[in-house]
Image (cartoon, rainbow, N blue to C red; front, side, top):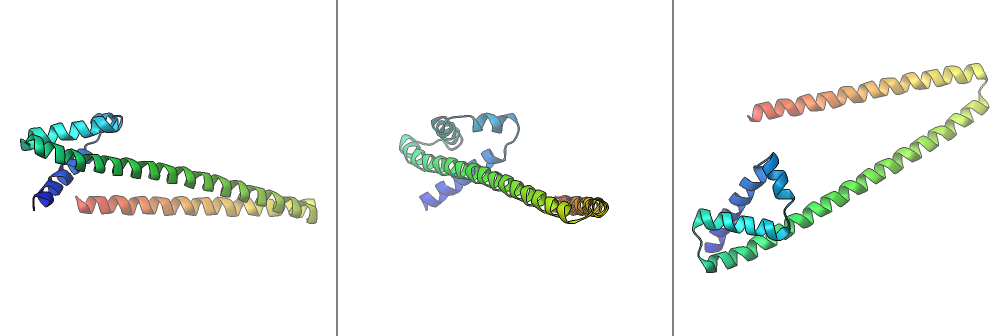
Length: 151
């Protein structure tokens, strides 16, 4: 039961800390692992009037939690970078394929036909971009509406 109570206290403390935003959160993110652990221990010791035995035990729990959070953050950053690289590669491949198709169409069509085809292609591309922007705005409006309802 003590461990459960301790876990609840830790979660509440970390949640409260995680919900802080602005300069305090940015400053906390820049702290070293040891500084984060010390900060949480001092705060919990002050708030809960912990004895030395409790501090030692809680330090182990806090250390594991900080390590888990930092590992998860590093993994998320890695995943984010990989997704960006994949997007860039896909875009480059798409542009290369489009350029090859364009060259083939230019070779096959007469100059007038090619001009008309290129113009139609640009029109389709612009319509597609407009639809994508509309869908994005709809999603943003829906998210905004959901946030307003939640409040």
